[in-house]
Length: 236
Figure 1: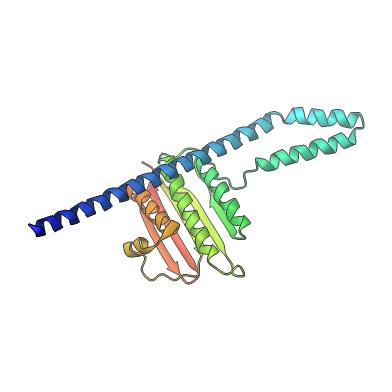
Figure 2: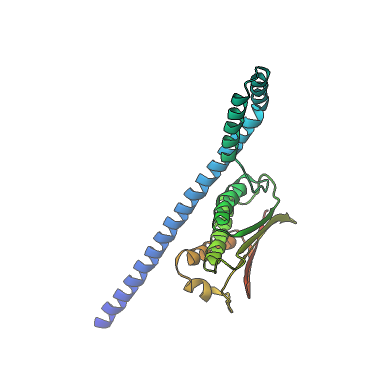
């Protein structure tokens, strides 16, 4: 009887751990989806603002010409300064052609540059992709976050870099992210992912889930000084 009670307690504990893990994963997923949705909204607003500037270009020029005709050079300088300030706020440095991807790239890579990291980004994508935009942003966001985290662990005097390449190849979305690292990991398997703690470990798990969900392919490689991840997702 005692053995049955012990077995029952063990099963109950295992069930509680299982449901607690599922609940935490759901909360993390919901948080990331809200974060991505917010970033998409921000980028859409930037595009709308830039379109507004293009539409109002002639109005701005007419105002400047009017001040010049009256010899009001101080007003011209003041107005140009104001325009430059507003344009700086809507500058989109990294452009792939895809709104959601641009939102993530500009948000993450601008922060990485401020941390002193060397960035190289080559991305050319269609305006719309058939894969889930939330999955795409979660994938890209976690890859960049992990790359930034790895670079931050290095000495600032070293060449800390992140390289990103994206394109569509034969109806496949191809993504490559490589970064400088001071680690050399001999075995990039499930044990490595499971043993990683904190944000990096969560990021690795989220990346794998997105790839698995979309029937994709992932390849990780670690050589001295460089960590690289390649992902391919079918678009049909």
